Structures are given as structure tokens and as C-alpha cells.
Image (tube, rainbow, N blue to C red; front, side, top):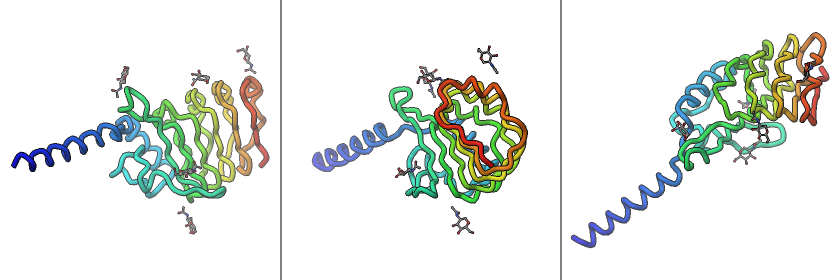
Length: 188
Ligand SMILES: *[C@@H]1O[C@H](CO)[C@@H](O)[C@H](O)[C@H]1NC(C)=O
Ligand SMILES: *[C@@H]1O[C@H](CO)[C@@H](O)[C@H](O)[C@H]1NC(C)=O
Ligand SMILES: *[C@@H]1O[C@H](CO)[C@@H](O)[C@H](O)[C@H]1NC(C)=O
Ligand SMILES: *[C@@H]1O[C@H](CO)[C@@H](O)[C@H](O)[C@H]1NC(C)=O
Ligand SMILES: *[C@@H]1O[C@H](CO)[C@@H](O)[C@H](O)[C@H]1NC(C)=O
């Protein structure tokens, strides 16, 4: 009897420790934000039955140079109990929606890569308030309209890749203020 209790006790402890160490989950409001963003982009297949930061099935995938399907998180917040989305890479995923205006709802986002999809519409000027962004790639879509001057607010931006779309208008002079920029591609 004592032996059985010891065994059950150890199993219990092992289970609890496992949940405690691997249990960091995405902040609730960011889960809702991802649902909205997925809907706007036309992203099918994100499985909200598992935590978006769990690296399970629908949230990370083997990538090639051409194809990628990853949501990456930083789970070190609040003593490694809370995760925030830092990277969304959806390359060649047949996305046929539009760009989400509400990127701000992922306040820790540093990189968004939506290369080679069928996204249409314009770049929302609101993206200029996602000030942690370091890298934006939208090349190979069906985007149109002007490049918003508001992007000049992204002081940490090092890479802005917009080639192979249908953008029009002149490049805003304000972008000259992006002091960290290393890569800027606009060919159409
Ligand atoms: C996507 O995640 C997988 C698994 O972690 C990794 O092997 C791959 O390099 C990642 N690809 C990109 C483009 O981040
Ligand atoms: C994480 O910690 C910060 C500061 O300690 C606090 O303001 C915030 O509410 C915490 N976040 C969550 C989701 O508990
Ligand atoms: C995109 O569509 C093509 C053609 O229908 C299909 O072969 C491919 O598997 C699709 N890719 C994804 C990621 O769904
Ligand atoms: C910009 O980068 C610096 C240095 O990496 C960092 O300290 C700062 O917090 C970043 N700014 C934003 C708005 O993320
Ligand atoms: C660039 O930034 C400087 C200082 O913040 C500002 O005075 C200037 O008007 C900006 N230039 C443009 C074209 O936005």
C-alpha cells in the first residue's frame, strides 16, 4: 500500500513538474489576436486546440527556402510562464486575404514574412505603430497602393522587402529616416 502511494506520488510530482516547466502559454489576448489575423489573411489550418507557442503540428513546420509555416514565440516572460509572439513566417501558403490592420495586437512582434502568397489590398498605415518590427517581407503578392509614410516610425526596421507587387506612387521621403535599414527592395 505504502509502495503504491509512493509510486502514485512520484508520478504526480513528475507530471506537475513537467507542466510547470513546459507550461508557458501565449498571452490570452494574443490568442484572440492570432484568430483575427488568421481570418484576415485567409490562413486555414492553425489549430487553436493546441497553444500557438507549443510548436505543435499546425504552428511550426519544416521549412524550405520556398515554403514556411511558422509562428515563433518568446516564452521567457514573467518567470517563463507567459509567451508573446515574436515572429510570423507564412511563405507560399496560398493566403488570399488582406493584410491585418491590427498588428499592434501582437505587441512583441519583430518579424512578419508573408512572401509569395495571393494577398491583395494595401499596406495598413497602422503598421507604423508596431514599433518593435525589425523585418517585413511582403514580396510576391498582389498588393497595391502607396507605401505608407507611417512605416518611417519603425525605427528598428532593418529589412523592408516589397518587390513583385503592384504598388504605386512615390517612395515617401520619410523612409530616409529609417537609420537601421540594411535591406530595402521595391522592384515591381
Ligand atoms: C520553422 O520551424 C522549424 C521547426 O522549429 C524550423 O526547423 C525551421 O527552420 C523554421 N523555419 C523558419 C523559416 O523559421
Ligand atoms: C507579467 O508581469 C508584468 C509585470 O510584472 C505584469 O504587469 C503583467 O500583468 C504580467 N502578465 C501576466 C499575463 O500575468
Ligand atoms: C497551395 O495550392 C497548391 C495548388 O492547389 C497546392 O499544391 C499546395 O499544396 C497549396 N499549399 C499549401 C501550403 O496549402
Ligand atoms: C529597438 O532596438 C533596441 C536595441 O535592440 C531596443 O533596446 C529597443 O527596445 C527597440 N525598440 C523597440 C520599440 O522595440
Ligand atoms: C526625419 O527625422 C527628423 C528628426 O526626427 C525630422 O526633423 C525630419 O522632419 C524627418 N524627415 C522626414 C522626411 O520625415
